[in-house]
Structures are given as C-alpha cells and as structure tokens.
Length: 383
Image (cartoon, rainbow, N blue to C red; front, side, top):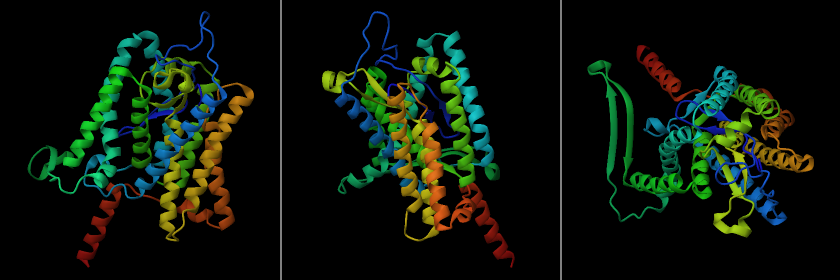
C-alpha cells in the first residue's frame, strides 16, 4: 500500500481475477517521477490523512461484508447466492492468478495499452454498476419513503422446455432496485468520463464488499491454504520480478482504493495517491467473514474470533505501513496480513480449547445444502 497498488482483486460471479502491482503514479497512471519533474514530497499531514483514510476504507467492506455474509444466500436471486471456495479451488487459485497476471503483462507488452484499457473500462463500467447497485440495496430499503408505491419486476431467462427447462437467469427486483441502478449508472458515467478518484473508490468499495459477502470459504483449512498460497504469490511477484510494476502502471481500472496525499494543496483535483489493492482487502476479508460465521455457529452470542481477526487485520496493515516507511521500500501487504489474520485467531482458539472445533467447522454450498435437504425429505417419505 501507500504509493503502491498491491494484492488487487476483481470479484466476479464465477471466480476472482487476481492482479498485484507496485507503482508510484499520478492520476493518469504514468510515472510520478522522471528526469525532468521533481519528485513529489507529501507533507506529514497529507501522508497521515491518506494512510488513515485507506485503513478506514479497507475496514468498511470487511466489517459490513462479513455481517452481510451471515445472511447471504437467502435471496431468491441467483446473483445474490454465495460462491463456495473449496480446498481444491484454493490450491489452484495462486496458479491461476499468476497465469492471469503474466498474461496481462504480455498483453500490455504486445498490444496497444489504449485499446486494452478501453475494453477494460467498459467491462468495469458494467460490473461496477451492478456491484454498486447491490451494495446500495439494503440502505435503500431503509430510507425509501413508505408512501411511494413499489412495483415488482422479474427478469427470467430459461433454456430448453418442458421437464428439461433450466433457469439461466432469474432476477427479481423492484422500484427501489431500479433507483439504485440509476444512481450507480450515474457514478459509472462519472468514472468513465473523468476517472475521478472518488468514483474509483465507490466502485472499489462496492467490489470489495461484494467479494467479502459473496465469496465463502468452506472451512478454516481452505482459508489457510488460500491465504498461504497467495502469501507466496504476493511475495514472489513483488520481490522477484517487475511484472507487477508493469501491469499496475498500465492497468486503468477500479481495482484499488486510492487517497490523495496532496489533498490539502490541490483539493479534489489532487493527483498524488497512496493506494491499496482490493486483494489486500478481499482475501483476508473472506477469511474474517468465515470466522464470523463460525462464531454464529457456536451460538454463544459472542464474536470472539471475528473481532480477533478484525483487530489482527488492523495490526497487519499497520505493520505494512511501518515497515515500508522504516526501510523506504514498497511492501506486499499480504506478507504481514496473512500471518496476523491466521495466527491471532489460532492462538485464541488454542487458549479457549476450541482449535479442533474451529478446524472441523464446515460450510456447504447452497446447491449442496438444497440437495441434502431434498434427500432428507425423500428419506422421510420412504419411511
């Protein structure tokens, strides 16, 4: 983080695309320092505000995304159903991420950066609108005036006919959802036209919150495999090659949270940013959300493991900032976040004598749960 873009993730409905990078950039994504332009030196106040804002913004999607993940899957909309990550998925994740990262590196080396970013902008425009609309929906439900009539709509797309008919898309929405979609579209147009850092952050926060809410680890062991693999991935691509640097400097998309260090000098037109990749939020965030659901499963009306891992995340992020400033070198945040987010809850579980119970906790995908329920009902009928 800070003058760097690390551990960025693009959550999608199927699987996330991991992208890491390290760079110091201005608002156009070009080098902030060259032979003819003096290096920007942030004031202590500007630096503190930027770092503090990034930490605060990182905590928001983790906290609220984890809370929303507890009730996730109860919606009738297929787009609101969580995607369960298994141990096999977790083991393959760093390999797929590395291939994707290197593929983007080759793309930017071979093809025109302008046209690639144009395609990416349109892709993120659509994804960002949907993500932001989904994020706003619960808040709209609370503030929507009761005297305005609400109309229900359904978007249904099927394949086949008769007994072989299969639902491809079944999306139910109402007037409130339409309003959220309109507001999100306005933000999307603002981002496309101006690439303003506030619009970038609105999309980035929406992506991160949706990722934490909708990506579910099936157990703690899977979480350890995923975080451990991405720990190695992050360190290797940051310190071992310049691939991340090249991709991050070329990639224009809301895959990171940014905050200007020169806000006091230039106001909203500031262009010297401290950055934090979305992967440094979503990857630890889905593990923290899993621990919250484990807390709920214990039925003790406590949130011990959630708050422990949440504080561990703050500690890890703070350690990243401290090390970076001490050694004057950009750091991969997962290098510090992964040991903290795994180590702290494990120590607490050992002290409470619940380590075995924590690692035995298992979640099933909505499809498997539905199939199991149908099997149980069929067995009852046979009896």
